[in-house]
Image (cartoon, rainbow, N blue to C red; front, side, top):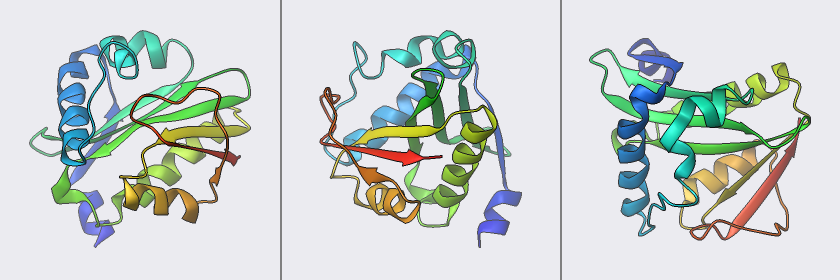
Amino acid sequence: MLSETLALITIRAASNDDRERVFALVSSVLKEYGLEPDPETTDSDLRDIEANYLARGGIFEIIEDHEENLLGSIGIYPIDETTCELRKMYFVGRIRGLGLGKHILQRAIDRARELGFKRMILETSSKLEAANKLYFKFGFRPVTSDHLASRADRAYSLDL
């Protein structure tokens, strides 16, 4: 099933031309789970994807079908030379449960290693049960965070 899905999608680097669609995707998924987007703080990085991710040495990718409909997103945000943060891993409902999340998360971990990062962190909400299970399967472990985003109640870390 995953191989069929991968044949029908394109994964590419995002640009600022994609920011409105990415923000709409993030907002839509958050609202499905009773969470609110926060364009002033937590989601302000989407105002300038190129500066906040790409120019800093990170990655921001989007997943599209062959008709260029946005299906998902994922970002690797550099914190410092050794640590990056997994951000904005969101998928539209119709592609969840097909194994794409596993593929995209493994891709992000591999890319972070290639970039020389030694640790990946992330913040999430306990309401995103499937995502939390996926993080555990990949070896992420709970950590205490000094500051969590307003919609997050969990933080994880993975040694790369």
